[in-house]
Length: 253
Image 1 (cartoon, rainbow, N blue to C red):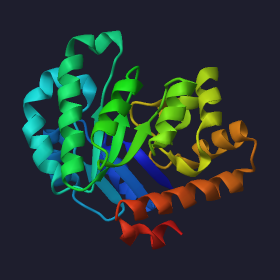
Image 2: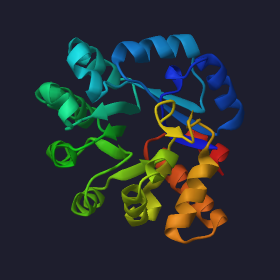
Image 3: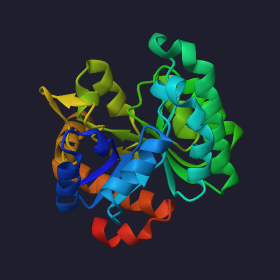
C-alpha cells in the first residue's frame, strides 16, 4: 500500500496507526501542519525509510503560526520534501491570505534556492496564485497538488507547469470531484488518504486504503482495477526516483 499525503501524526492513537502503516505500507508521506509539529512528530514517532516526514506550515493555521516561518525555511534545507504548504482562498481564511502568500512564497523560494524539493500543496480556491508563485521560482522541484479542486482551465495550466496530483477516496464523493478525477493525467496521479481529516462512510480514511482509491479511479477512468493499480505503482516509483528517495524503489516494485 502507498499513501502520498497523510496527517498520520494527528490520528487518535497515532503511534498505533504509525506502527500499522509500517506493517502495511511500502511508502507513507506524512505531511505536517507546522514546523514545531514536524519537530515533535519526528521525535515522537521516530524515523523509518518507508515513512517520509516533511516540514510544513498549513495555510489554515498561518494566522496562529506565522512566527514559525523562519523555522520552516531552515527545516527545508535538510529535507527532500515539504508539506503541507500552500494557499487557501476560501472566505473562512481570507483574513490571513496575505500572510499565507508570504509563507508559501518563502517556502517555494527556499526550495528553489536549495535545488528543488518535493512539495505537497494545498490550493483550495487559490490555484492561480499557487501556480504563479511556482512559476516565479522555477527550480522549486516537483509540485504535487493535493486534493485538486480547480477548474478545467486551471488543471490544464497546472499540467503544463509539470504538476503532479494526489487524490484519495473523499475526492470522489461529489459528481464534480469525479468529473475532475476523470481529467487528471494518468501518469502523474498519486494516491493519498488525507487522513484523519478526509472521511469515507463516516470514518477517517486510513493510510492503507490505497485499493479504495484504485477502485474509484478504475470506475471514472473506465479501466480494469489491476491496470489502474499498476499505473499508480509505476507513478510512485517514478516520483520517488525524481525526488531522490531511491532506496524505496525496490520496495515499490
